[in-house]
Length: 248
Image 1 (cartoon, rainbow, N blue to C red):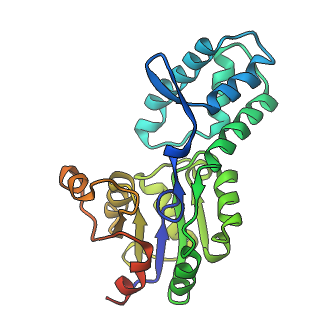
Image 2 (cartoon, rainbow, N blue to C red):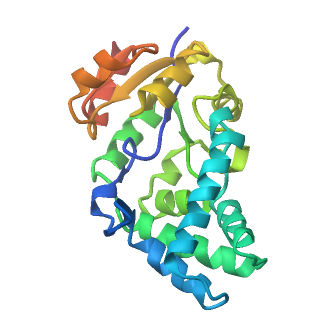
């Protein structure tokens, strides 16, 4: 079947999420984002809780959601995670949970960089096929804001983010959602992403052709040799290689 659509991952594919630029500090032998201090500060205005107790509440939630959700490829929206954190310290306050969410997302968003040539590439591709986004992320509002500011949103025919559909890649449900919105079958799609497990593995399981982008991958050959799942159909270092790949 001819290719009718290309679907992209968001972070480290369409845009770069530079965690290395996120200010951090050491706490109890671990590096933690400095933004967690600001989140704790917002909570401390409401309840008397030291940073250590707050950090443990956050970690406990991550552990529990790991078993109840992440292990089953189910997404947990950031607002829900912070609502859970507050409940663990005896607070019920949706407005505070939303404030925590906004503080955390602002810190992440500040590290995002958009390669300047990506709009031109999407224009060239969209003249030939439909384009979509399929992203694991816990806050659709932030993802959409990044797409809007970078002017990538207007170049995408469908945007699917895991917190909105409930499923995380590699679960079939999130891939099926974006294909439904694009009106295409698996053998008419190319999926492009940086994760061998989530992007390549998840898409391959549905019969979708895959492209692994290595722009932000250290030692890609070593990573690929260690990967036990399906290998990508193609590997590229930059999205600028996609038009020629589509020709082939």
